[in-house]
Image (cartoon, rainbow, N blue to C red):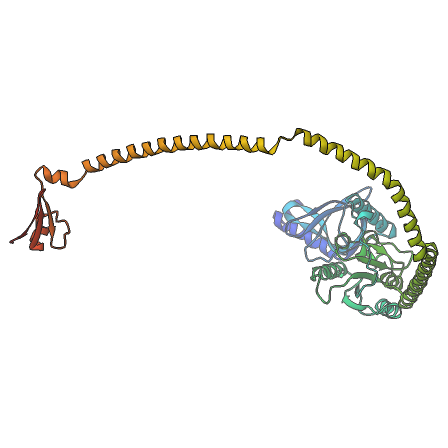
Length: 440
């Protein structure tokens, strides 16, 4: 009967269910499509894994390594374990690792990402930077081991003596994308005058599966390539492989060796071009010299002998003198006629002298009258000023009963105190001056 069944609490039941699920489904692989991808602020990712008939909640903890960005619509294979969340009576799949479910799913994700980035303009031709003709330094971002770096060094050495600067990175795996971004950013952060700042970058790796090439399809790497101030040549995989960084770079090379060829000119071809240019310049100079000689000969043949030129000038002079005689005669006659007309208008000298004397006499009379008037005005003004000055004289003041007190040096004394100090004083009255002594 039911009375014999043990009674459990809700927590005990939830814990039992949790243990049963974890023991029964401790390590499983599940294939499905991602939906409702939610990134929590603490770094955890919550999503649903579904097929046409069912849905299961999944969670990827912050510490779980993810080889790609989880996006809605991706078909994936999840490896993990089933557990429950007692607080909400919900079971969920804990993600331990995740991979794309087949090449088709990967290509679908890459194409969707390519379309989205293209809409932002990251692949526009107007963003492409020209490559330097003869770079002094070439920065290479690739694995430090393997054939890629050896092929690039060998090809550059054969073509042009440029300095190669290697920034070693992992070119596949979960940390590859981050390391590539750091390398690109590091090269771009070097000052323009830094001895290690490259003139051009080569981002390369050898061939591999589509999963191996995924770091070069990561959105962060593509954006870093597009934002580089240094021109970038990409050479990822085989000639038939195309990654998203190839769209964002300034030039795509089919192979790492091809990237080295795109980055450098051929030294022997440069030398041959210089020699060819020098020969052309020499031939052009020789042609100019011959043309100058020909021009000089033509000019010399067109010039007349000095004696012939002198004879022509003499003949022209004779012709001009013959034509000048009648012209000169007419001019002389015109001048004579003009002089006669001027002479008829001139007065006799005696008449002009008499007129001048009369004008001078009139001027003298006016000046004499003006001078007398001026003297009278001056005399009247002086007399007025003298009378005014006399009215202000101190002698008039003394005549009214006042006296002027001075010391023995005839300095005016204005106060009694000054008179006592002087001791001996002179007193000026209107009619005479007397001396006196003062007492304290």
